[in-house]
Image (cartoon, rainbow, N blue to C red; front, side, top):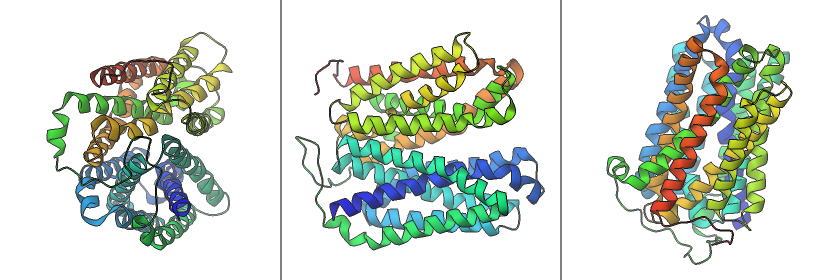
Length: 396
């Protein structure tokens, strides 16, 4: 039964990734059909992101009252309904309205399942969980491209809604398992669900250690957002790559993310989460140097792949470390704050870079990645020092 529960959790994370890249793939076809400017797409993404922030910050209270299983099932149903609504939306205002349940559902799924796996499963499962998310975010543009090749963007959303509806059925079917299965608690820790400690987000962010953790998440997710949104513009505007070839470089980045999380899951049985994060950031730094160096254009995809590969272990391993760094009873609330910080980073920092690069030039792209990677590594080292950790080769 434990295996069944874990498989459905993985599947739910595949479903979580599907909406995240679906809108971007569909928007070039959506906006002329809806009769709105291309720039209005950012409104939908901002509303969705605000919904995820709200649900992340309220997740501890919701899960404490209703339980992880119910919150996951209802939240998955919300995202399925929102995707179906996108498919039949008669106009742009409906997209903005439907973005609210889409964001609320995604944020609740994200925080609920991350905390559950952090409490009850080994680090390798957390890495594979986020590898499953990488599968979802990589597959959804393919779903939309198939729909557009023989139909409309609405067909793509119908297909995504059907996949999400199947996941809803699975999450409802396993509701009785949440209280009955055994788990793989990390060595030296009890496998239980501690009563969540009451803590407001404002009280949490007054703590220096939590502010440092939030800074790590904000800057790391900003690296992903800058790559996702602006790598094609950099390759075309600053490196002279053809637009068609540059468009495919986002996929190269996400292949790196998925591969990095898979390898991190394999290595999690031999290395600690702290070591995996540190090694990943070293790879990210090297990758940024590849992009900065005056190398042939053919080296750019290698650099983007390595940025995704190196940055990818941070998110799952930092989440898995949360109960150990801040306490099992406080982990749900802290994860909610950390994920809200992530969404703030993804909402603001890539947009800020775009505004600056539009005026100065997209040659700033690798320099922005370098600055963000330095912030990530410095904040991570400061947090670990505050918690009394020092780098060493042996597993702790």
